[in-house]
Image 1 (cartoon, rainbow, N blue to C red):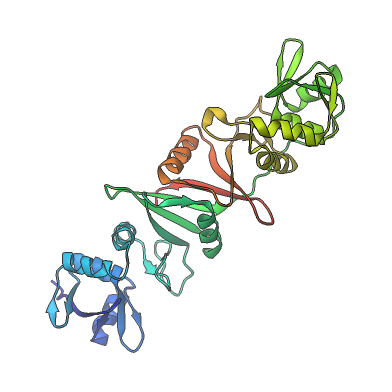
Image 2 (cartoon, rainbow, N blue to C red):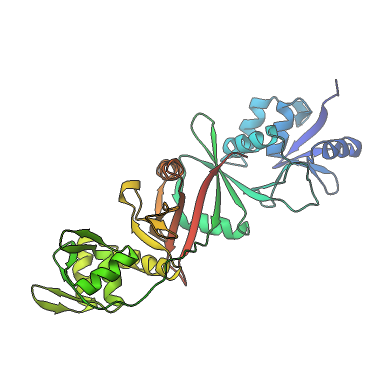
Length: 343
């Protein structure tokens, strides 16, 4: 049995006094960094204590695993969350290194180690933390679109998500329209046969007997594309139409922005209500294919719980769809995909 390496706990790091022992820890798992002396961060030290590979001392006295964890919490408030994710990835056979600053881990492909480029940046998160879309955006940017989120539940189980900026592209061409639609209250209808024929070809609206029913979203899009809308026999401007629609659907302008962008991407958005999202989105003819995406529109200040996010992603996966958040705000809309993975 290999003798445990003695390390001295000093502040937010642990010092390996003997260079030969530091070299051994690094060569067999990439633990520690060499400065004037070999230093281990608190997370990896905890793992090595658990594995019996190091013996920690503080002020000359040995401290056990429990005492070490209590000590580490003084420097890393979410220590146990970070440790559980680090430990899980190490147990799966990965080389994991703490990123400078200590907020994330660098994860290397199996069989690779520094100085190779890490495959992902990993952030450890408690299920009780607030889900903030702006934080996810920043984390993705910091990780150069290679981000894994490890969300730890109250029992210590970990759910992993790949989070990335995502670009959708379809085959449904846009075009202009002409004709008339009538605003009822929370939807529109049309009996204009010329318009109905084009809508039929483009899979917009729903035919009910002698007329076609349109959602407020579809109607707003058609008005911008040249269709005239009336209510009680009077023509409505786009401004008046949106003012009316806002009373029924307060976020219609935000959703409409995303709807129009997706149409420009040659995608066909339809309501995603049955799936708990704003849109289900088709890449091609919906009569010959299924919708591969669920898109939920949020603004840049959006907050939620991780339980709600987990439910949305799991539901999307269960119906063979990708869960995408369209974050509206700033210079442009950012489409963020969250996908569950098993490392």
